[in-house]
Length: 626
Image 1 (tube, rainbow, N blue to C red):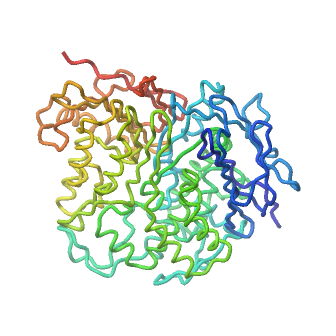
Image 2 (image 1 turned 90 degrees about the horizontal axis):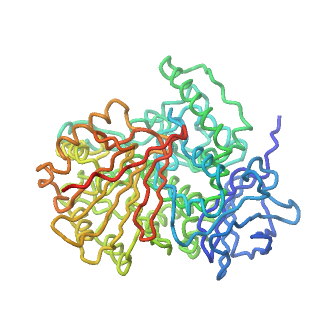
Image 3 (image 1 turned 120 degrees about the vertical axis):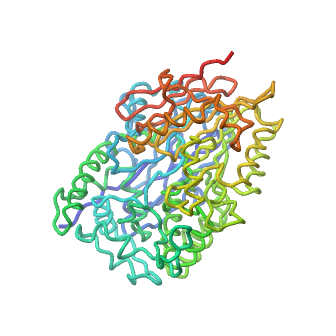
């Protein structure tokens, strides 16, 4: 029986919006022409260079609208928007629950001064915790006036998990590929010659780490086991359903942000052909995905009303992406693993990267990407991946107040010169110098780093020990202090006399939340540095382990501990904020999305985490020392 596809498959999603720009993304089930954008009842017939169409499949067309005109959008006002064509009318009018009560169309607000923002990372669809984006939408629904709205939503990594995919999600991905006619591709040096031979039947689930993913051809080079040949290139401990093809990557993005495709498929709760353990795992994941997809209508509404900015972390591509130079040699030296990584990067470009700063991609990336998707060949596929792997403009900044700077901590690595198996620095010297130049002349700034710059010292010590015995990949041993060059250069930037007076760092990655107030020891005019870590939106740290880390970290590396003088950050005074004022706790292990309110001078006035159950944790300032 043929399935009738809705016109809109995903979106609309607001991306880069300011006084001169609006960027809007959506996916339709058929090609559209003669699009008109309406802003506050003013119609703008869109020219060819203002609409980018990507043919994702036979029944999937992505549209990225970017309109740029001086003083296009007034500030601090609700602006209704819509997109129409002569044949289909208003494209968004048939989308259920797309706008908030008492509204006739979706709306956004341009806020040049960031007075409030939402931020978070790590949204794993099949994790048992609730989806905090749903809570963010519920908060917006209670008061969506222009003054009360956050200025933006910042997603700082792991918006999707390409390496950790539930069995029922992989089944849904297979159905999506079939429904939309997403394209097949050929593989080189793989056990499967092409993606047509991938099975999405339940009996084939949880086997990709054994039957599909590539392996190295040389012995493992660690201090523990040098004899182990053909070890996995992809190091995720839960890579049983790791995505491989571009069609799979496209499908998971469509399934992660909109509810339409979920309504067209029936995913069985009980399946045959799995082991008892995997059968129980399927049923657990099925239940968690049931809750996840129930919240997608609200997630879509949130993303349609709030300008959203993104940056990748490892799971957007694969676990431990570029963690060590040795990993890079293995991953990019094998045609199939390079293709898998490249497909993840193509997906990131389509659904995340372009929308952040469309002008960065228009000259080189968009034409090549569009030509490939219109009529794909294997040579074009490989050339596009090479282009994206060498692209060095993933980072960006917003000319807001405070200035918001989003760092690329994945593709500009400072590789270890002493041992290729040691963790690379998160940014190399050139990238750090470029960052410093962006800071010059700023009195207040917000920096977005996927990983915390100032982490939990005890956990960093465990990672350092694991690196010493050759197991850096085992414990995800990447942090800003892991590489001496990166650590010393970064700390020098903070110690510089011209560091902005108010310096706020937003980070995620770690699956728990905390906040630090940071100063420079022995300096009377120290800048005010704040780090706010919120993770994850739908993920958590192992529940029994984190309280132990929290307690022992306080004992060993508390503010007055002499052990701090043995660390790289000994010149910095770091005080942990108290969640809801609790003196004995600094880390919060509960899924949530960060909500930060800023004072006029750029300092955070209120730091809190909104949890999926609508409870809230506020990080209270540390007690003053006498």
